[in-house]
Length: 341
Image (cartoon, rainbow, N blue to C red; front, side, top):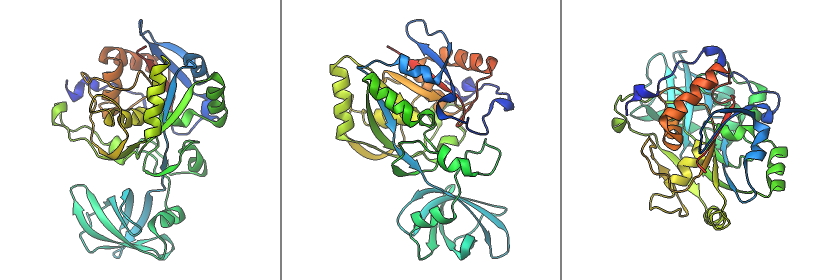
């Protein structure tokens, strides 16, 4: 298939710029086998769509305040988006400036902190931070919430909590696993009361999740790299769900990528490392049976993933329906539930 097969026109007013007052207040577009017809529901109806035998798998990554603002010695403004913390004083990052900085360039940050460009690797820069604070603490002190580029505003106080899941635990993401943003503590309690099990994986979402697919031929696309981890406890939880006849329901495409990356042998295994798994139509899923996800950007790798799971024609029809019914799109938008069984 071609990149252009996954294009759709989205009215700008449907891109959610702020979260709703309550996490669970979103709408839910439901499509399930065998008829796969779109049904308009509320997110709170999810509890009626799951079974006591099911297992819900969440991504427990935690978004770090990865956006920094600074200036060069010349006074030129610089914006830094930390992609990956290497150690206490080094990071790989995107650096935006009117002129691309060269190795050796010093950047002045807030509160008299500084960093230096060490090298450039393709679109990324290696930075060294000059601070008495270790980098994670420095980011907490002067960093900003790394809102996606389609949210046309600076980060606000509400984003500190709302662009973070209530079960976030492992710091390292520069973008939220957005399907998880709909869950609040009451919803998690209701899932447990239903009798369904929960488990966690970690996938540190990178900024590459927002990068456009540049190659028209999908086979030519180079997938971004993200760290993931699947524990032996989660592997056991999946096995137990299978034994009791339940489904494995991935909460978000990032949970899908983690589970499927750990299933490359054909069965789920405990492992961790970097994944470049690119899921497109024709992919054979090894672990998941159902998926809760948000609506994704046109021509994005995540739209291709959900099309692989539910079928290309079904997903494109679902998106047409969502636009006609004025669903809210992207990170702070509404959700979709897709179930093969």
